[in-house]
Length: 426
Image 1: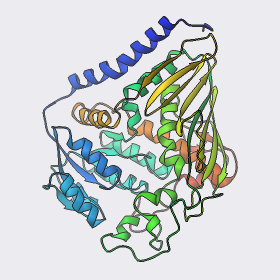
Image 2: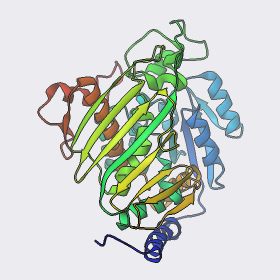
Image 3: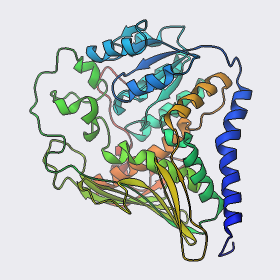
Image 4: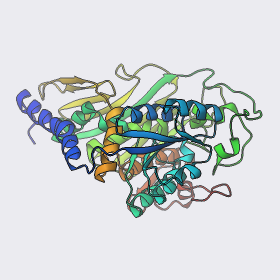
């Protein structure tokens, strides 16, 4: 392609493509929807943190009724009943909620280790699912979720809401237009200074009386209760999550995959560790993961012990091309040209979570695939998992996308799944 493009050509190509993605797509989806005025009856499984936020955005849609809520924390369950309008039925076991024939769809906003089973059982019960990211704690769980969605013909949207932001869609179209030239490096990062205390180091103790801790653990190994092993900070323990790279990196890598038209790395190497944060977390406070893709390299960086931003930003995604660099985060995007090769362009942020919920609801009615379908989201979650596996094994690993196996490395392959604690099974 040409080394230089004019400003008019650049804006025409990028703007037209973005308009098609942001306006025409949703309009056509609504026109395809069957029974557009039908009420969608929703049950919420996991009602703290993102669960509470999800409920708010679902409830804001006039065609949604939140009829049931489920949580293993009695206090959060009571709060969820009120948030749903005071009439939702409360459950402490998600299986009882799924027995209800009037529930059309469920929100699964549990800790990561509880994403797979409720999603799979909801599909079996004929429910559509909006499940939070990352898809699961292992590659095997994610594949089982994809298989269940396809086997039972269910709509499963994953909470990677950046895909529904109009400015993310525009940034993706700019990358795909070729305006940046040949892209050889994509960079993503999260930086901040959590030293010295981090999430602190509380002692083990009895679980609070309002929490059914055995049910909270579910398929995870039996461990003594620790305040950090529940609610928000669960994400720093290997039993339940994968640290910053799965918590935040999944969002960022998903946009790289989407824009670059890929869904799996060829190989991954990683280094890092827990170096300076004095808390009881198990996952690293510093990590670098380098990914080989066909024709380009991607790097994910997590720096939890030094808050100096990269290019002035604490997190984000960059696409480095021969004509220029595109940066995007939730607040906007910016193209910085290589001298004389293209024009600078930028744009502000856009709503993401609300249209993402709406996309799911429209797909429940139309039976179309949502913008963050379980298959693409599963593959975007695999990449962070592979980064962790490369870190834990201390070696570069090579990935077989189609077989979802690590090549010639039985020890690494064992980390693609994990045993479940009885009586739970995948």
